[in-house]
Image (tube, rainbow over all chains, first blue to last red; front, side, top):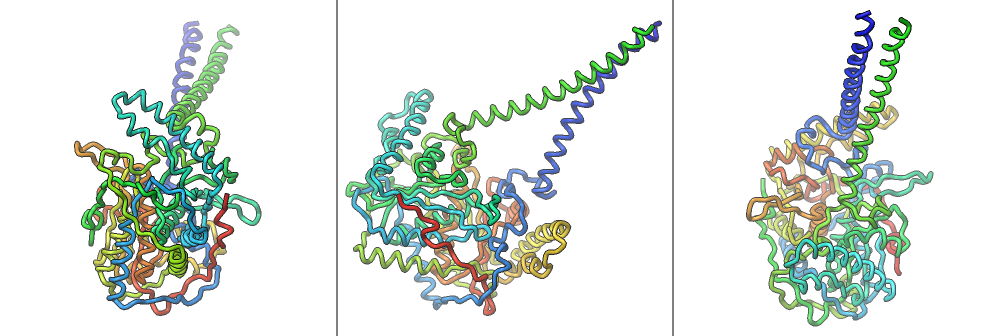
Length: 291
Length: 291
């Protein structure tokens, strides 16, 4: 009898133990699954410094070498323009001086700009390298005043929400200063807005999704070329990444869901009263290390 | 007797049920935790299209306007060089043609390049805009043959692992073709390797971490300017993002942990036998949309 009486209790204790083991094993299993996944992507020595998010990109065959998917393409001799050393130094000096005059300008005149120049600067941007030569960019050039105004409304609406939210947190903040940021007049006045979308994936011939590795880096490089081209042509802009406006602007401009807004550049001539903050850039020895 | 006999069995069944419930509840809790975290970062209107990862950047006051932290800086009139329209068109056309000749070149001669040119192209890269003018870039210029060789060893070691892994999956792949990718001779021959690090955060005067918003985009834009500057000076390179090598290369070059490798550019003159894949670029109407 005592034996039978104890048995249920014992069984209960054993079962609770089993439940506990079960739960832990499960956790371990999930952890292990996570680790396996991580290891499939990462390498033992990478795990030493998991914070290197540069290594968290999905691994694909030779994805680090941006043109490998093109290995089946014919290879041709590379033709190169070489300048004498003196000219190289001069050219590089002059190019630096040109780019160093670039400033982010938020006061843009409503004067029209030649559209041929806009075509050329976007063609220049389109020469950027891209992961596996996917060219994952779309440049939407907005000239239509109504569309520009709708873009402004969307961005200012979001900004207003940011602003009101902040107000709760920062009573003492100077209202006037914030107002300059919240009201984006250049979205109406600039003759051209260029919205740059990254295509986060493409489509293969069979309709399947084609991964676009490093699409954000590729498109940002293209934006770098675009900024250089604008500066070279004598146009001004300001680099903006409108917070939380991506989906609404994408819908407004009727872009597909595989395209995500990366940047918005209002482009034109500076207005006569344009000012810029009196900033300096880091000197070379603060950005360059020689080994 | 029968009752006592059944009880242990019943208890066992109940316990297994409890174990099962336990396990599921745990999973749900974790899922819910994940959701809460996601919601804390996102906004209601963003949730309509959660795939817009462009909106997953941490929200900060006016982080979309890249110079707002500078609002306390004095504002000065902006001086601008304006060209006649004809010249704008010509300049933009010529700049496009210059950049359009750029190709990713993997065959680099061991001939030395003028270091003044390297200084100038990095100064040009350093004129890039950056989130809140943080200038979150470090350009490590490697000339030392031993260090270059160590870099090559690290990268080829990683590439070999990629290669061996792939072998298991892709028996039919042409070995020779892969070999060209795995062996990165240019890491030894190029007179200069430029390793570009993004500073994922900085430090405020009080020693606290200072977030660097959009650091990857900013540094990629700087890389775009760097590529344009190299092309303008008559030097060649290939854009590489060495997979999984970040932490080891960072340690080799003695960079702090807030710096993550974004890109590696081997720089020099093309070797005489340099070839490039016979690629074309998308025409303008495939990358530009006008509204």
